[in-house]
Image (cartoon, rainbow, N blue to C red; front, side, top):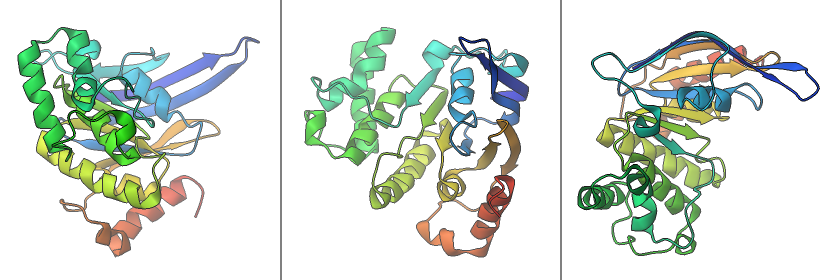
Length: 251
């Protein structure tokens, strides 16, 4: 579904200084993959997401998304989930989930039925008429995930979606995301600072380093699904985390 080869993006400051945001980004993503992008702040993770969403152009490299038989339209085929849920506080849960469908002008009755199905899938059946302030942070992020899926996108981009949650809620949301991913069959690219989260979630992992910002490695994570928290104490899981630590110069 996605092929990147040697992708590079450089920003130019007002003073004319050039700063490399991401370089050497090379990876192949198949339909249905869940790709973790892991690395420190300033290594280009969000920039890469913006390139995939067609919000930024790359300066160098090859970017291919979709195929001739299955073309890709960024405005229609991308769903976004951010660190904050960004729910509209004056809209109820169902109306928040419906927002992308309304913007795209999708048939209302079909979109509303899909929104209700997604709310149930993310574990919030019965909360359709609640306002965001009546929900916990984890519940708000579930609404944000349902909203990202309501227009049936081909690609879901998630930028540190659980970064603002407490540790226990974050682990629960990791398991919820895996369940939602398996049920929806969507292709997901997931940005995180957490090495363990990257290994637990990803079918593949891209490791990005800073100074200079570049993609240091891209590899399969050959751990069985369904993933569980118990896997974190197994030797195969530890091997993947050590591999990432070494790439980041932390081991």
